[in-house]
Amino acid sequence: MADQAVLLALSSLCGSSVRYVDLVLLSYMSRQKKVYLAVGAQALFLVRRDWTRVLTGGEILYGMIKSVVDDEASEMDLVLSLDAEELARKQNKVWIATEPITVTTINKALLLQWLEVTWCADFMLRKGRLGVFPKIVEKLSEEEQHTNQFPAVRPFINTQQVVYDSYGFFLHHEFEDRSGGAETLQTGTYLDGRGVEVSISFDPPVHVQHLEELGRDNVRHVAVAWRKALLESDFQTQLMRSQPYIKKMNLCDDPASWSGWELWVRTETHTIVCIILRRSYFPPMMDLSQDMTLLFRISYEDQKAYNVRDLDFLKEAEFAADSLAPLTQTHSWLREILQAKLDALIYQPDQYQWFALHLKMH
Image 1 (tube, rainbow, N blue to C red):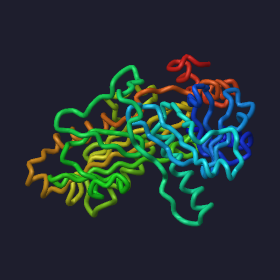
Image 2: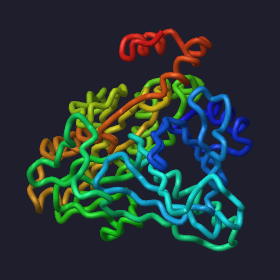
Image 3: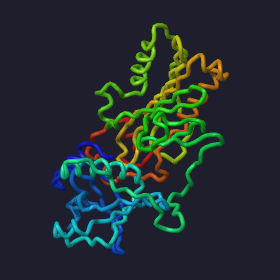
Image 4: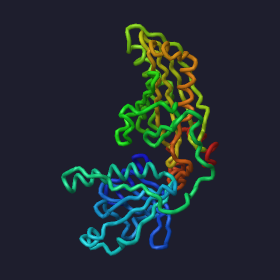
């Protein structure tokens, strides 16, 4: 993830529109090299760490990618296989089709998302029809490689981990996606046999410098809009709770800063709990902020039928919010880019204070 200034600089360097960049370890023909992998509109670009130029032959057109293998045995590895016919057609002598390209990154899930989006868009432009992203999930080694220092926290008893948009959180094991469980049709809405409906939504990441001009410098300003919408959703409503919320779990050693707000509203027919969370200063750029909302609702009829007390319902919503965490268990940030921004004096004093206190960077 990168802000527009970084992406524009990379786009100029690569000569093509760049949508995403990540620091990766590239393994090819028994050689390894740390490079920046820039995901462009028509190709992948391998950029030197000093950002002086693209590596020689470091442009991999999406049309040359035969398959993308997501290694189940590794939390960080994915493997690119190239198409021999496309390489011959492009007269590309830099890459050999029989030699796989292994990409190691702590942001594997996010990188795979961007690869799928850009590959499919490029395929439609080239072929004039829809294409299926050639992703394969398999184990490439016999034993699992635990690359993180601490193992992932497993769901608690009688709960399951729900995965949505590179995040995961815990729900009761009876919850199912509204789509019926199809992974490709995730709706972000989950239902269980008691009639409880859970919805989760994510706003696009915003640079921390732009929050104030957008009127969102504090998470309570986002909560005001939600409170207004909930109170106007029915003819008669009652606000039971509106207060700051402190997230109580960090299940993946996340270095980011979290803040939140909790709303509890009663309408004519439903009890609603809405928890708004803000994750700021998150890797790899460390200067972005993202808001996410978790909404629990249940009708009074179902509450009475299944003996769901208000306090228990509130605790269930808070437990889900507390368990919300990115899927990545290992975190690192792009220090070179961040240090250049710090030296340019573009941040506010409170932001410099956060970087100094938490990252020891000035």
